[in-house]
Length: 97
Image 1 (tube, rainbow, N blue to C red):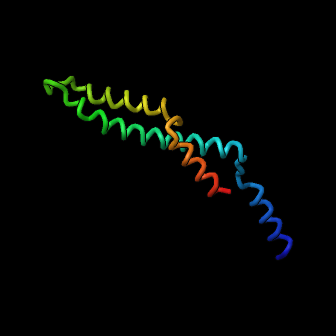
Image 2 (image 1 turned 135 degrees about the vertical axis):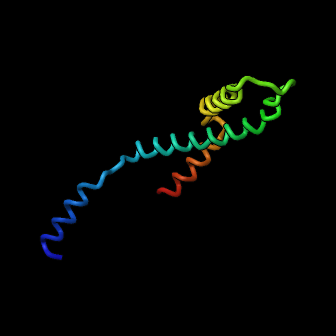
Image 3 (image 1 turned 30 degrees about the horizontal axis):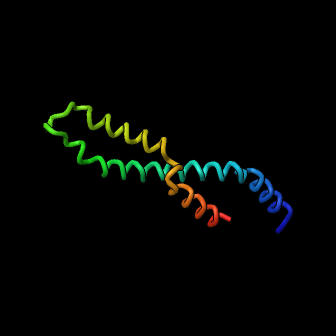
């Protein structure tokens, strides 16, 4: 390669954004916790489906929305403590290295 091509490649390489390993691991942990929250939410939705029907069948229009939001926040709060996140984080960390 000539000097101009090498200079252009060096300039392009300097513009590539880099991510530090510690922040990369933190992002991976955050995403694995979010994935675990989704799994927990799905489990809660299935487990509590029978209780949503109620005794009389008539509910307020926002009742289902409120319960869904409650389960979502409950899942987010408990994410990271069930072990799915740790398994996924460990697996993806090994694959990345």
